[in-house]
Image (cartoon, rainbow, N blue to C red; front, side, top):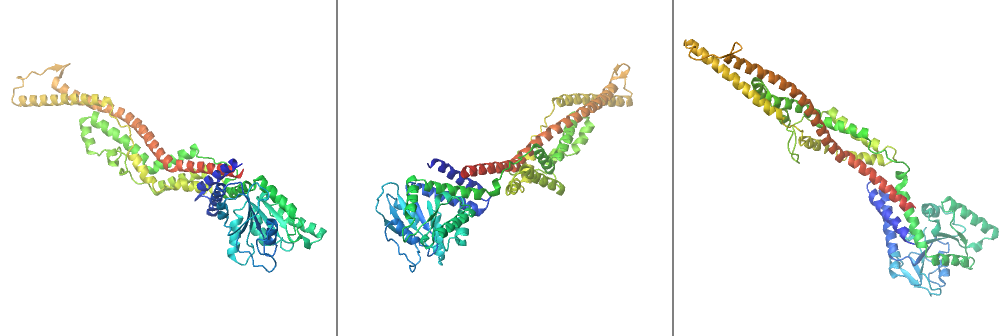
Amino acid sequence: MTGDLDRRLAALARAAELARERLGDAEVAAASAVAARAGARLGLGMETTVVALAGPTGAGKSTLFNALAGAELTQSGVRRPTTSAVTAAVRGDVDPALLDWLGAAARHVLPDEEPGAGFVLLDLPDYDSVEEANRREVERVIALVDLLVWVVDPQKYADAALHDRYLRPLAGHGDVMVLVLNQADRLDGPALEACRADVGRLLAADGLPRVPVVPVSAVEGAGLPELRAMLRARVAARAAAVDRLRADVRRAAVALGGEACAEGRAAGVRKAERERLVAALAGAAGVPVVVGAVARAHRRRGTLSAGWPVARGLARLRPDPLRRLRVEQDEGDDAHSSIPRATPVQRAQADSAVRKLAAAASEGLAPPWPGLVRRAATASQEELPARLDRAVAGTDLGLRRPRWWILARGVQALLALAAAAGALWLLVLVGLGFLQLEDVVPLPEVEGIALPTLLLGGGLLLGLGLAIVARWFNGIGARRRARVAERALRRRVEEVAETLVVAPVEAELALRDELCAELRVAQR
């Protein structure tokens, strides 16, 4: 019997936990209280049925209590003091802990004339008492009992306090309520039927169309057999406690979910918004600056490795673009680059992309989820710049030295050595000519060109040509390296976006789905 109730209770408790700081504080607190109260009631056993008589002053509630108990347990009458404490009449095997939980100050054990399930009948203080403590006690016990018997008289059955404060908020609890129209002996037949019909009309307006209305005269005994039979059947069925808890759980779940779990499904994080976010964050993180520096750094390093000696000397005078930006370092909490900070326009574009992603992801959801999704997306907004900077600074840009640079550097070294040898030879020849000893050293020729001149000119021209070819290849390599670096940088930016923006948004949407699913289980 309680297996389904256990599942509903667990679902309500989980929903209240998920809803904390997301949905209304009052509704969350009420759902948590219902889950705790229902758990406590289950722990006290479901074999006993607790019935409470609640009503206004002068409706004959205590007289009816004595009549049902079969003994004069409480003082009754027009001039009696108003009931200020809960009085319990107990029949059968009832756990004293249950009575302690109910807060029954006065307890009377009735003869167990009909062995079976335990039964507790409570006489509550008057709900319209001038004493606020009495009214609070009524509200406390009403939330705990299994079956509510509202006792009214022909003069007070339409009392606004009864309908507005008690009956209407308990719409949905009709299966665990009975309304007793006491002092029915004051009305003749037609008047009684008209009064009974009017009570039914008011109950239907309160959302309680199935609540039975039992005319009774507690003094003369009219209607008491019917009421006793009704209560006896409820006690024998042992379902009132479960029905009451189910109704409580359902009401708390409906109040907690409200419009928040209305029909509708989130659009989720779509590819277009994700790409727009990564592009905006990449711009704010200085990815284009780094990509440009990668291309320039590759050309510079290619010139230093395979360029003409004069060009190498000039290249050394310029700082390395990547070292100046302080990228290609190990990523860590203290890692940071020297990339220029994002401009106000870039920051605005990044903020706009974050908010647009959140808005698109929560499209189709009722409040408060669009705001909650936006809160999740922007929760780490202050952390974004530092995380992006560390990610960019620690990115492997793939700047490997091409193997042909080594060969080109060796060839350039040989050509430079040849040119230097030719220049030195020519200087020696000039010196010997000045001393008129030019015939001492032979002057070999190749195709009519003196070898020293061939070495000098050939070394310089071939070195320059190799440098031009190497520069052309380095340009191609620089563009390729820039594309590789851009992909690597965007992947790192995407990881940051996923961690700080997309994942929180998807987690909030998943939480919403789980919360609403739990509420659907609790409302079944």
